[in-house]
Image (cartoon, rainbow over all chains, first blue to last red; front, side, top):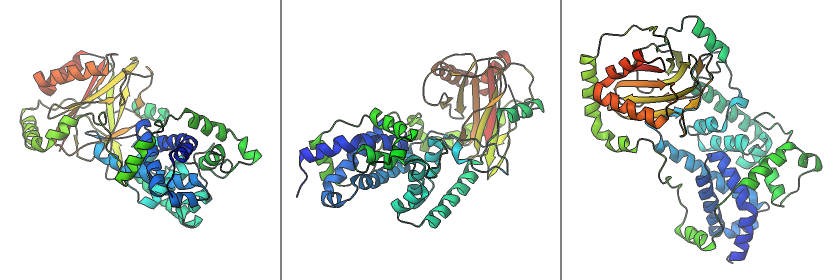
Amino acid sequence: MTITDADLSELYMRYAPILHARARSILGDDDEAGDAVQETFSRVLRAHEQFRAEASPLTWLYQINTNWCLNRLRDRKGHQKKHDEKRDRIVLREDDEIDVDRLDDGRVRELLRAEDETTQRIVVHLFFDDMTREETAVMVGISVPTLRKRLDEFLRRSRKRLGVAVVGASMVWLAWQLGGAPWVG
Amino acid sequence: MGRLNDGSRPSRLAISRHLAGEAPLSEADAAHPAVEEWAAEVRAAQPPAFDAAALRARAARGPSEAPARSGGGELVPLFRRVAPYLGGLAALAAGLFLVLRPPDRDPVRTKGGAELGYYVLRDGDSFEGAPDAAVRPGDRLQFRYGPAGYESLVLVGVDGTGTVQTYWPDEGGGAVPIAPGEPRVLDWSIQLDDARGPEVFVGSFSGEAPEAVAAWVAEVYAEEGIDGLVALDQARPDLAVLVLEKR
């Protein structure tokens, strides 16, 4: 049984704004978010029997939407500037820990690229969907302890990659006052 | 609210299911500020207009990979296209630079005016970069600046091939307003590519538009090379020029 245009329209009106807002938060781009919505609904057409059987259509749509967004983020590797820009600081204090509250969306997107698919899903659900660890574990199909371990490993790798640099203005000022040997002007 | 949800608020999925009429939130959850925050995002969303024919055509094509963005995604497409052919020229330019470069400049210059410095992240270690120092492909640089009373900054770079790239502002717009007082560190870093040779970074604190700065940097570099930019640096307190060599 095929899905009618009227049914499709009703689904689109109900879910497209949600999926668009969600894809925009993950991708940080309106146009790509629009493409994500259209691809997600084309999957509804291709797999409508499976879709109809879902207790929560939105949860199913989220899974499809996640796949597309992660593909899009991976594809961005080939569209970098001459020098790859990183929205993070590199000045390092060895005892710094990653402060997840300081990880903005752009930085999370950057860190995601180097992760395996399961970790990428975990990070998307935790950071962009604002899911709890328990909800995320169900969504990804792993146990909560496994999720915690993966999250810890992600944060550890991120710390290494970022060289976590939380140098406040006062430290910069201090370095300046102490001589600032590397400064030129 | 912390970045990670500790269960004290409904997730965006739960809120979305509530908004879609799939599963209502509890009274307590529905009153949480996170609900209105996400609902506002959803209300502001502007997905493509519904087009059943287009969706069916897309579905008929089968699963698609995320397509490349059309236009606007690359700042230096020309460089990328010709990059395979420029390797030899870049090496030649680097060699000429080594032969012809002026004597090393005083590592701590005291001309006054605005200043530009940098940190390096290499192999997991970070350190302050020295002026006129050699850097390596793959190094990540984070710039810092001393505004010396100026209130805006444009940061552009030019490499050994003459390719000019604007780093700040990084997403268009005019010169970036800055606080005129204390020295600051930019919030982001760049990772150097594989092309060897000189890399010159020019900080303009004059308030000129980024396009104008990029244009005259390209012109001066083409006509007078690095020395032309260094001479301007010495003459103008609203400029700071950093010359690095990538080996």
